[in-house]
Length: 78
Image (cartoon, rainbow, N blue to C red; front, side, top):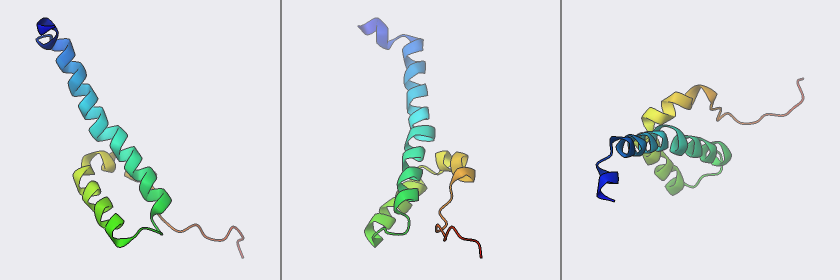
């Protein structure tokens, strides 16, 4: 078991797991949460979301071109 912790491949796997969680998984979950609840959040929920946006900003900036928080308007044009 001790040789497993000294293995450089195990260290690489752990680093890739942490980086992918920080840059991919949590930002995508945060975007999903914001997209579904943007217009109905309470002020404390919004404060928590803003804190998470500050914490996970590098991952969020990767997906920012794909996020649309605008209101869904009426489907008719005219």
